[in-house]
Image 1 (cartoon, rainbow, N blue to C red):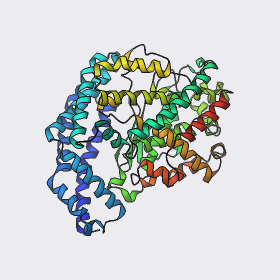
Image 2: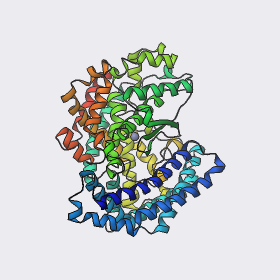
Image 3: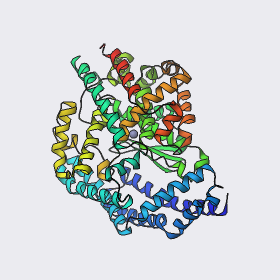
Image 4: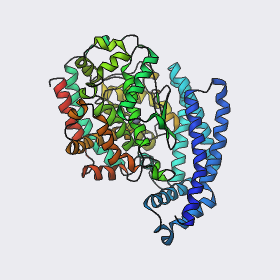
Length: 499
Ligand code: ZN
C-alpha cells in the first residue's frame, strides 16, 4: 500500500470509531435507554456527530482524498481503495457544502422527531408528530439542496438510496406492477377471505425468541458476528465489522409476524456479515444500495420463507417451540403465510399487496417534493390513496400515516427500494434456479445453506462494489425488469387460490 493510501486508511479508522459509537447509541436509544436518560443521550449523540462531521469535512481529509485522486496515486491503488477514494471524495464534496451548524441542528431535530413519532404512534395522534414531520421535510429538502445544488431534490434523494435507478425507471417498473397486480389481487379477493382465527392464541415470548434464534441459525446468520434485540419496528444495524444486530417485535397473541421479521432481518444481516473481510475499513464494506439490501431480506423472507418446502424439514421443530403449531397442519400453515388480502400495515402485508403500500408512499413523496404538499395535508392524502390502491381506509393515524419510522428520521426516497428489492428477487430466483436447480427441491432436502452460500458468493461478498443495476446485470445477465416477479406471483398464487 502506498504511504498516502495508508494515511487514508488510518484516518478512516478514526472516523469509524465515531461511526461505531453513534450507531451503538442509536441502537441503545431504540432498545434500552430509560425515558429520563434520553435527553442526555441525545446530547452525547449530538456531540459525537459534530466531531464525526468535522472529521468527514476536514481540510486534511479533503486534501488526502484529492491527492489520492491524482492519476499517479490513484492508479497504484487496489480496486477497493479506488472505490473508496471515488465514493468518499463524492461524499466529502457533498458534505462540505452543508454548513456544520445546520448539520448539528439536523441531527438533534431528527432525534427529537423520532421520539415524537414514537409518542404519536402510541397515542394514535398525528398532531403530536406533525410539526416534527414538517421540520424533517424542510430540513431533508435543505440538506439535499446543499449537497446536490441544481439537481432535482427528489431524484437526488432516490439516488442516495438506490443509485442507478432514477424516477423514470421506477415509474416504469411500478406502473407495470400496478397494472398487473391490481387485477390479480381483485381475482384473489373474489375467492373470499381466509379464516385466521385458528392462529390466534397465546405464544410465550421467550419461546418465540428461542424460535427466532433457531430460524436465524437455520438460514445462516452467524451469532459470533451478530446479536438480537427488541424494538417497536424490526430493523438491522451494523455496529462495526463483525457486529451486526437484528431487532424484532414480539406479541403474545400472534407469532407468525415475528417469525417472518426474524427471517427478513436475518437476510439483511447475512448480507452484512458475509462481505469479504478484505473490504473491512473501506467504503466497499458500506452497502448503501437499499434496494439490493432489501432484495436479500425479501429473498429469505418471501422467495424462501413463504415456500412450503422451506418449512418441510423444520415444521415439527416450530411445534416444539410453539406447541400451538402442533395442532395445525403444514398445508394450513402454508396457506396462512400466503394469504393475500388488502390490509393497513405495510410490514404485515402479504408479498403481493405489499407493492401497493410502497407505491402509495412513493407517490406521496413525489407529492411532497415535487408538488409541495405539506405535513398537515398528508393524512388525508394517505387515506385517499389507501382507498384507491387497496380499497380500505385506516381507522386512525397509528394504522395509517404513523406506522413507519422512515419519515421521522428524514429518510425520504427510501421506500421505493423495498419494492425494487422484490423486483430484483424475481430475477435472482431465475438465475439461482439455472445454477442450483429447483429451489423447491433444495429447500425440501434441508439444504438451504447452499442457497445462502450462492447468495454469499454472487452478491454478499462484493459489498458495495457494484450498484444494484450492475449487480443484477452481473448475476442475471439481463437488465432489471418486473416480468419475472410478476410471473412468479401469477404462478404461485394461481396455484394456491386455484385461479
Ligand atoms: Zn428490510
